[in-house]
Image (cartoon, rainbow, N blue to C red):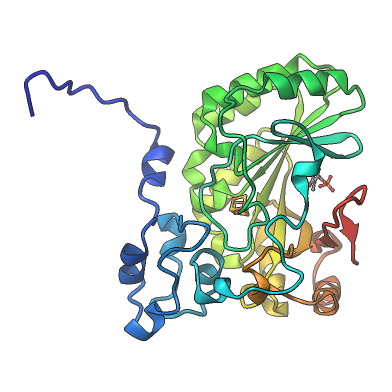
Length: 332
Ligand SMILES: *Cc1c(COP(=O)(O)O)cnc(C)c1O
Ligand code: SF4
């Protein structure tokens, strides 16, 4: 160290500090999970989609087990190397529907902004894991120009990646841009951040939400009841207190949640946290995810079971995305 080295450090928000502790390296993770040498061989040292796992979720994984529902969602396993017919890198053909560098307008009245490629965590089944995002453009001028011209767009969906990867200043300026477009009535967030790093929903972020005059809708992504805990529920409660509805979408995944009792517990826990189940997605056919496949028939059975065993509003709609369709395809 020389005397010239500045000691001034910029204080990162708490959530950024927590994010920096994510597991990114195979050796750190297999050590932490106390996997036997036999089980270690089933974990890919380098998946095509890099490992990225928040500590909070890693703590919920059972030690020395490869069948854990949290592990299966986030840890790259040898099964990803299997090539399967009918599975592709870009099953939804999203790039075809881009109207500007990062705006997808596929459905009537709604457009989706791929705000960033960064996520709080990397889910092995993600349908956007191979998407080549525009990373150079930082601002949203082009997207806002398009939205301003399309007067029948009443809802803008902030997705990604995860929109909560943006910092509050970026989110605020995006919301301020939308504020100036009168035909936009609602802004919807699609985020998995609260599950991995609920600290992201801090005072500063809540102020950004509060400053918007648009109706905001929050959709989180939770696949297993163990992802929910009291910190997550408390953070979501703060959002709900602003008059923002919070909904959840789940991806139906073999070995994770393709089970009556688990889905029932998930619905009940969500509702108990004031979060309403929205969609149960049949998984998209992304290469390397065939081991997650659950059949349509099994999906229907599971939803029918929920219908019999819980409140109507706790039953998600079973859907799949079919490229070229005017909306999600309702299976049940
Ligand atoms: C899923 C999706 C939406 C939203 O669809 P809803 O059925 O309203 O939830 C909008 N745009 C795109 C590109 C989508 O993939
Ligand atoms: S958080 Fe969402 S976008 Fe990010 S990897 Fe997971 S499923 Fe994909």
